[in-house]
Image (cartoon, rainbow, N blue to C red; front, side, top):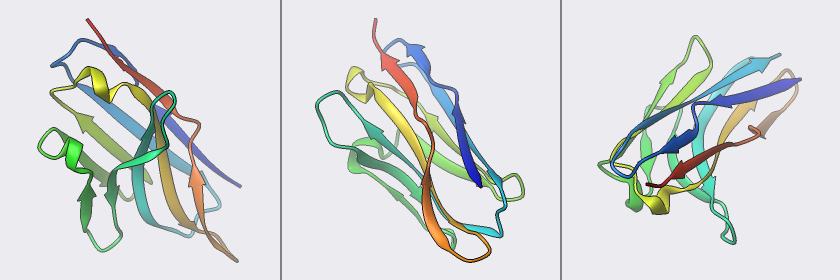
Length: 119
């Protein structure tokens, strides 16, 4: 019913930039929150940035001032602009959206996109 498709990951040198995109499709009535999480090998998945439907934005402390989350509401798409990347940012990045379908409001996850920061 719902698909979240991420793109934009890859290999980048320390100090470089990447822009992730996540597009939601399906029988969507509306999308409440959209956000990005990441999971490094051997670690738990953690919040990176969240864009709430009222416009509020939350960032993890470790990305403040470096990453920017934005949404294109008509396109059901969320972006994550990542600047000044560090090796410790290496992880699989996942998009999550709280989506209202005809009969339910549920969380949906994308398949993940690998971000590797290395020289």
